[in-house]
Image (cartoon, helix red, strand yellow):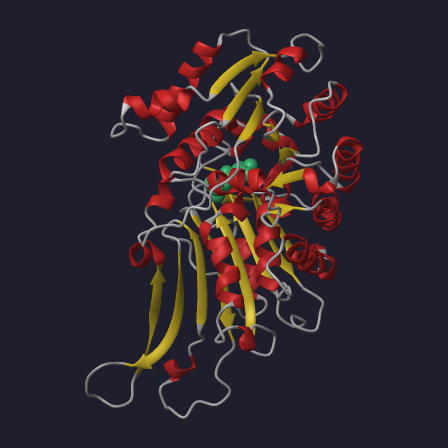
Length: 481
Ligand code: BG6
């Protein structure tokens, strides 16, 4: 099956922080991916901006290198790459200085969509947004793109939103959560809202509980200083896991349009119950005295968590009584991102075999091997009486739909094209971000005042206390593998 390309209008994309990690790892490869897909308009222009004083040619070499490393270019013709690189120009600008902003202006074309991508440390958001405004670079047709961390609590998120709204309307602000660009995350909406099968069962009458897991094998990977100020709760739960929770729990919007979808997500966040201290588990990984979380964040006394698990209630008519268990951690046994919907037992089994009572489970797996599996009970084949066994009805899309291509591509391809075409559905609205922080702030306060993180062995399933969180309710985490 071939993906359908919806053409986007030509654009000027101004990337601040163009020599940085995000630009090189994600943004430029994403644009190249769109070129290969035939979606990058031939006269699109990318204006790379950073402090370094380098020429456009040198910058193009950097872009080329980023493609070599992150797009594995071996089979692609030099001609194509060279024409791609011609879209790129570079201007050296320091956010603290007025120098060279006129050069940026002279690169911008009056009739094109303009997108200003702030791929920089959040401390620079304010200065850059103010300069873009003061130098008259933004038009009605402009968008600004920012990415986490979008604040570190409700107060700072409000301040950030207030600052951005001084210069841009909410409809021009694109707050990226790259999880929303993942194929299976959107598939969750398709699954829920375009099949008659699931929606009638999607409530506390039929669903026993929900488990959302994002476990990573990697550690903090050179981001120790950032992570030591952040921790798993703020790094992963406030944003990515919150988005997965919202899409799982939300009511169907009346149409698939940005504000209606975001209204429904906001209602979920507002329905989240206060999490009690007993429903929070934190942990820190430990391999041995030289390989451990403390060393990785460069702080022997850190109380920051590399693992967090929560039992969460969504207090509304649909979900009351169905807990959502959330967990995320670094240096875990395996990389798994999934949403598991665990249905209730059948109310009365007509079979002697206890296995007929095995719960149906719907597993929505984001990575690796994105797909959806429905655990179903069937008759064990062959003679020997009515024996029941549980089998997966496997809807792994990679094979069925030939979406291997999307494994190479990244979520940024979709998100950047959405910015250009002005579709905010897969971006977070300001009120969503603030409300998510408000809920997180309460948990964060409890962690810092009451909790000493438990130690867990590196490459394990997390601290034992997190098993107890479910044991207590007669439930078990799904295994991480
Ligand atoms: C980032 C976090 O937002 O998401 C990282 O800051 C984390 O700590 C990453 O590793 C996970 O993203 P993905 O797409 O690899 O699951």
